Length: 61
Image 1 (spheres, rainbow, N blue to C red):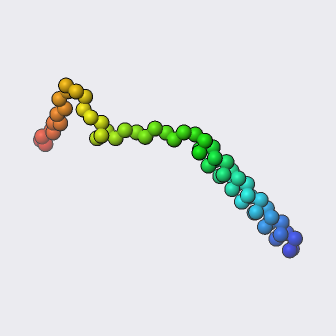
Image 2: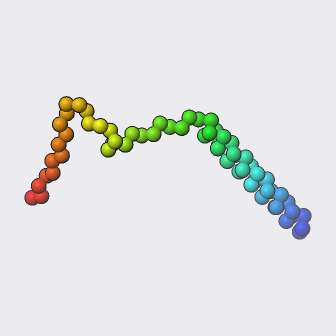
Image 3: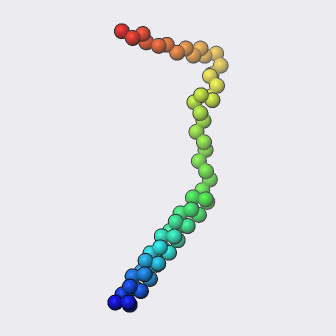
């Protein structure tokens, strides 16, 4: 019975090591890619020159 418990522990350790390796490889793969360009904030974008921007509110009926 003790041998079976040791085998289960070894199998669990192997599984943890495999998961750790996969996670490490994923981290390295993402680190190798350039970060995506940040999306410009709509509020920060200046209005186009010569364009009147008006906000109209519909009156409640």
